[in-house]
Length: 335
Image (cartoon, rainbow, N blue to C red; front, side, top):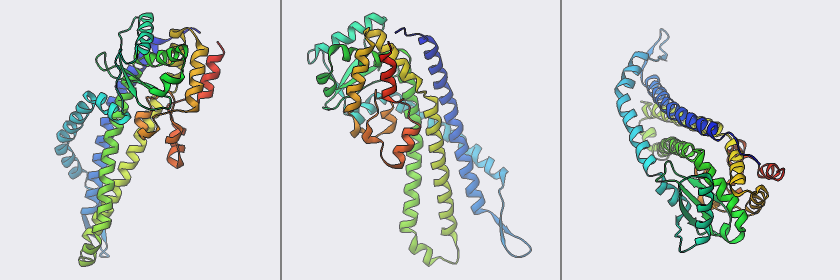
């Protein structure tokens, strides 16, 4: 099985990372402008000849407020992104419960990784382990100082050396192709949108929960009613933006990267059937389902089934970044 197109894949992922970096601020700015427009529509009105209130958007006022808020928005996003970008390693370790694995604790893994790295002439990444009897693995990091391969204890216990080499080769290929950099970028962006959406939903909840008495005592003014309408509109816009951005991210991160990583892993270990066997074992008992975060699950070699339940699970599977495992195995077994 010949692995080709690595430089093309690296270039493509770098371009997608740049696209996400450019697209996300535009989505944030557009959302802020819509928010200001909704506030203007709810707060500014006049009466027509029949005495009915008419709401009209004052674009000039909205633009003035938008330009005034622009430096704060850009500064806040840049600060958030910088903090998340440089703390992503700690974030992923906390989410997955990973810890560093020393050579003394498991020389077998270090020997396999070192041999694979020498084969492809790449630097040795860090190795982490998750105390989970189920099976899974993933690669993470944005540069040589943070590149990490993480495995579960169940993976080390149940896979043979050849199967483990195939899995580790798969993860090393993700690092070589800069897949991890692209995924980390998407995780940070989705995290920002999700946090903003969560704050808006909380505000909406508090308005309905604690605003009832105020509305009854001030029913004539109708001010709180207009405020609730604005909050509902903000919540709807934020949810739409978050969902839209998630779809864009899922589409941008092509499923083809998993096929490329399978090909690279098979080439590195020299045994496509060993990687196919490893994928079959992992798919039968995939671990890390307790993580509960779809953004982090994008890193896993196989998506845990337990994280795909209900309507949201259906939508996640529809736009999943992972191709069907059986199809991946079939391709590997052809060689």
